[in-house]
Length: 174
Image 1 (cartoon, rainbow, N blue to C red):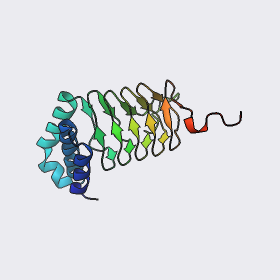
Image 2: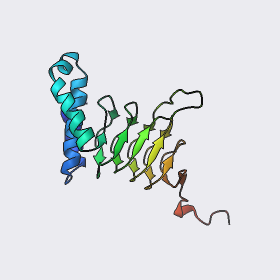
Image 3: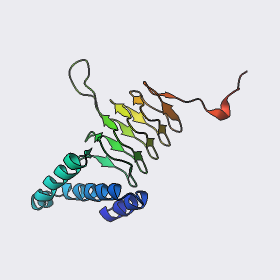
C-alpha cells in the first residue's frame, strides 16, 4: 500500500485526536523518505526536524525504520518508546508510557524485538520486552509486563502478564 493509503487510514483511526494525527503524518512521511536515497539526502532537514520535534518535544520514539501497519492509534503518546526492529500490525492502539523493545541476553547480545499482531490494544505503562510474538485481537491491561508470547484472542494483565479467565468458560469442569 502507498503512503496516502496508510496516511488516510491513520487519520481515520485517530479521528478527534490531533496529536495522534500529526505524529502519524510525520511518521509516514519519514517512512516514505527513508525508502529512497535521493529523498533522504534532499529531506535531511526534515529528518532532523522529525527527530527533534517528535522525540524531544513530544517524547514519542517512533524510529523511521520501524514497521507499523495501517490504522495505528496513539492515545496520549507521552513517553512512548518503540524499538526500530519492532513490527506492529494493523489497527493497533498504543497509549502513554509504553515501552516495546529488545532485551540484553545472558551472553551480552541483544534479543530480537517483539512482533505485534493486528487489532492489539496496549494499555498505559505496558512494557513488552524480548523476542516475543503477540497474536491478533489481544488486549494488554495497563501496567502489564509482557516477556512471553501471547496467543490470539485473549486479555493479558499483571506483572508478569497472564491471561484473564474467559468469563464464558467459568464453571466448566465443575
